[in-house]
Image 1 (cartoon, one colour):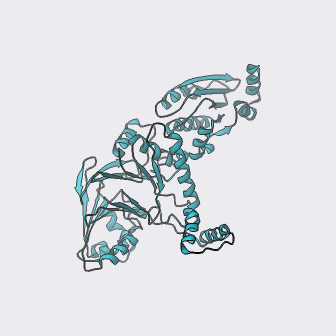
Image 2 (cartoon, chains in turn red, brown):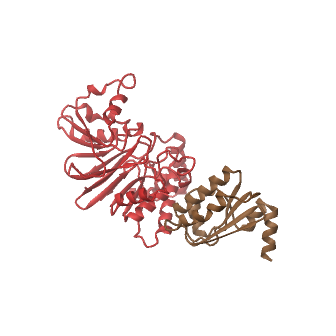
Image 3 (cartoon, chains in turn orange, red):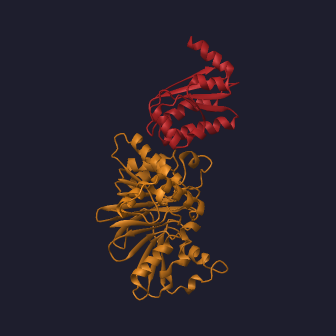
Length: 320
Length: 126
């Protein structure tokens, strides 16, 4: 595995920056410049970089889709949220229609935000492309066919020219797929979800989204600590605060930044990436959650090795 | 983890000492069982004195949440007092400052919750 690329990082439903939010960023940037001039593009870039994500960028609004670049020539994706649309456009721009590709897609589950990008996934409209969709659910195919059935979408699933296959995987045992060793495990979420452990050439990536963790269940905690054990990167559903996750939003199937840090520390993971951002959160709010998570990692570290913490954004790349 | 509790008129003040983490959160939960499951007649509030708590993990916060739910279910108040700087940070990060009332000291909590308990507290402090 070479790198992980995020195409969609928002949970529940896609969102977009509003005109008011963009205007606020521009005003803050102009005011922050305080009338100074910039002698070169490099100086200007340096100033913009200092503004941070909330000041000069955005975490983005596509729903979940993550690419794992394997270096094998075949594509590996996690989930088919709206982020799969820009991924598909990039793949088409790179290969064109005359060069068939293979896409391996691992599904956490089939809730709408995780499948809604597929009807607009351009490679599915190209004969010769092969799309292999894996998961632990028996309803993978039914869910994807149903969302494209009339009257919800103008192109029925059966009309897609690409070869599309569905492969159900047994959890808690290794599978060799696309040059990776892939293990999935059951997670706590309405209708179930599955987390994935991808390993290759001494690198391990965990994709664990839409997963609630029962704090009082020591056996379950132990299972996830072992699933995350010694991983290089853990992509983790940190949608809620801990207080919300165990009170008003208990049983909603999501987790918190606090539990993310603790599980990664116990597992000896090296990099935690906060994922499945709450759609009502502004860029400033996600910045704040990231800063607080880093602080919690410091004050809870004790004898654990330092854990790198980042927050996923659409377009982010993490080199392994 | 050490734990003590005392009744001050219509308020129980419970004081855990030490970190409340994955290793000993259950000990705190067990220690609170008599208070939560069999509140004394006339009891109207539980005050958790955290002046001796140096760290709290998600497991410890879960115990606070369980206690808050049980107390509110009986129409009783719950307050946490005297948070050490690190524990206050964890409360803020976990948004637990919205789960219970938070006061700077036991005395400050009793001032707001019960004049009778405050009087008993003052008498015991002399």
